[in-house]
Length: 141
Image 1 (tube, rainbow, N blue to C red):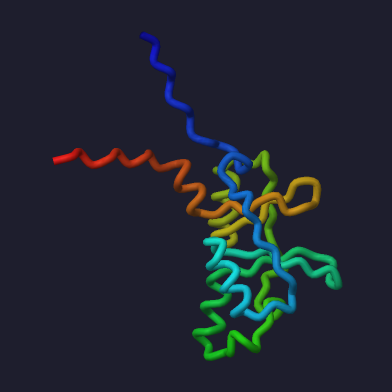
Image 2 (image 1 turned 180 degrees about the horizontal axis):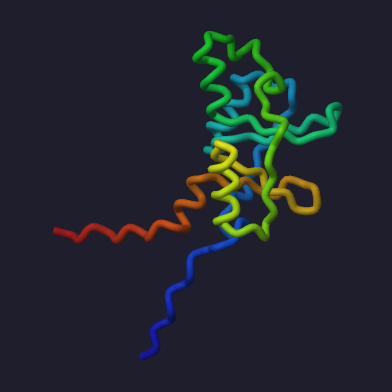
């Protein structure tokens, strides 16, 4: 009997990224952004600001830092806490390139652009899932 070879783990960003991209506007409050991020179970939102002509990112850490400073999440806008100097990944990047960019920049998410449009987000967690061996199920007693 032939046994198929195990699939090799993904090595490219396009294979590991989440294609669930939450996009919000700059006028969303931090509470609104947090509620949307929680509902979608994502750690970052892409902030599209047509007036500023750019793409930014708002992460759970940005919201946490604001709340930690005592700022009102109902009064603070996403725009005020968005990172606009975003490092973008390409779908064809290797996971090593993505991990290196994250390590060098000190962040945990990369917006993946395909033809200038957000196509996904790759996170440290996505990369770890690809690199770490799958955990074997516990034997039944």
